[in-house]
Each structure stands twice: as structure tokens, then as C-alpha cells.
Image (cartoon, one colour):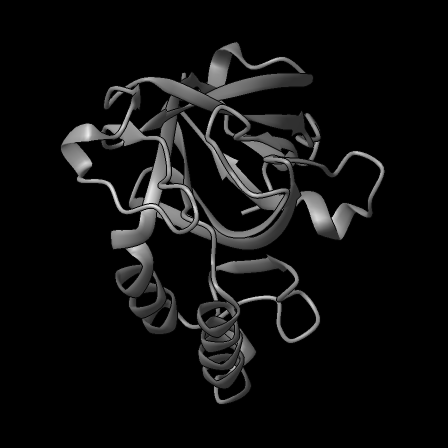
Length: 216
């Protein structure tokens, strides 16, 4: 008997990267990837720009649109990856908005396969695959935290919350004080590469109708 597929609603509830020494207010590009959700589909990508206060943001009280990452069919073993960029400057943020917005407005909706949320939600729901790849290529170098989880579709509950541990990709040092020049070798080491410095709390809801089957 073939293994049943599951139709999932996957939402980002909270992001906490307070393990980093961060400014009181910061903006970040959060890239979430659904890895091999089913046969012949290697992945899906969702982009969100989030404003954090002291390294945290809670989306539970916000709209569903602000939380949603994917509404997808999964089967067998699949994975979920969360990547967080360094704090975006206003210039970088504006550049991202212009790039994604221009790519979306020039694209046919039927060709879109990625979700854009957060502060970009007003301009589009999804860019073309090409635009997505180009945007990711532009910002991958700035990713500072990343985490992954593996799932077995047959073991999922109807509703469950999971925490994706976010690990630093490089050694982290205390930021230099304003007006003080100090060689990197003399700066205090905060965390070694691979240390957990954050958490993404994710909600998974099984939407599968046993009579109707999956949503693909």
C-alpha cells in the first residue's frame, strides 16, 4: 500500500536570535526551505523580512498571512531549513524590496512558486523561481544562523509545534565599541561556530481530508 500524503499548513510563530549581541531593533531576511517534500519536488522556498526587537519577534497575535510559510503536500521523509541573515541596513532592505517587487510585477502569477511575506507582503505573494534564486544568491553570504529538522510524514500529529535550533555558521566575537579600534584577535569570543544562538518556533497543521486526499 502506498504511503499516504499529508497536506500541511506550515507557519512561523516566533523567531528568537537573542543569543546574538544585537541592536534593540533590527531587520532580517529569513529564508525557510522545505526540502524534498515529495517525490520529484526537490524543494520549496519562502522569504520573509522581519523586524526584531532585542532579537525577538512573536507572530502568534498577528494575521495568518504574516505567519504562513507553506501550504504543501508532503510524503515520506522531508526536511525544513531556516536561515537568518545578518541585520539588514536600510539600503540593503530597500534593494531587496525593489528587486523582488520588480521581478514579481513583471511575472505571470501562474509561474510563481515561492512565498514572500513580512514587510514584502504588500507588494507580492511570490516571485518567479529565477528571481528567488537570484535573491538568495545575493544574500546567502550574509546568513549568520541556520538550522534544520527532519520529519517523517507518517509520524506527524494533526497539530504540532516544533523548534528549529539556529546555529551560528562562524565564530562570533563581541562587536567593537564605538570609537574603539581593536584587532579581531583581541576581541572577546562569544560563541564558536556551530553554537546554538537562536530558535525558530514552527507550527505544522495537517489539513488532509481522509475522504478527499491531498491538496496537490
